[in-house]
Image: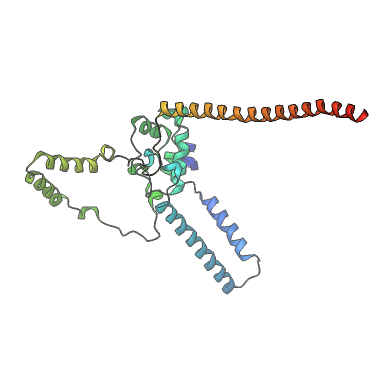
Length: 270
């Protein structure tokens, strides 16, 4: 019998096993109770408070995943995942991206452990997106990591969806366009829906400074730096000359006094 059927790593567990979860809850509960001699009423209030704290922590983590974007995930590779996937999943994906240079596109070297255990794109899949310059699609992420709300979802029958009416409206809109620009605009919008990586949107330009002196280019900037350096060097020389000049004047004054003193002493002797 194949032993992989009984191995935890061969099944999707999202980094959670039954033994690990039971031991963790048991340890946390003992920390909250603090003693083994407690009645049912006190025991119930302790468990209720523990569940409230865990509930608040989970809601706080969901809010962070929905509203906070860390600097490490500003790359275009995570463009479709920001705000839709938990921070834990983004961290796991970033760790796999760090291995992409060593693994490459070889599934054997990759092992695909994160795809099997946690339902996230593995290293060789991420390397394909990196080489193609396309972001990671949201469909590659398991629904476990996209659940960012405590409200249970209502089961919706997929057969209730009917897109024929909407498609007919799009076709009518396309045929009613008089000029070519309008038709190209409709085609571009449909293309962005069907293939998000082909969007025509670009990143905003850098903020233009409207105050102060404009910055120079690379060549002029280097020349300006060298010129500043030469100016500071030349400015330092007059200071050295001023000190030397002062020392010379002091030495001359002392020398003149030394020449005068012997004459006065000779006159006093006479």
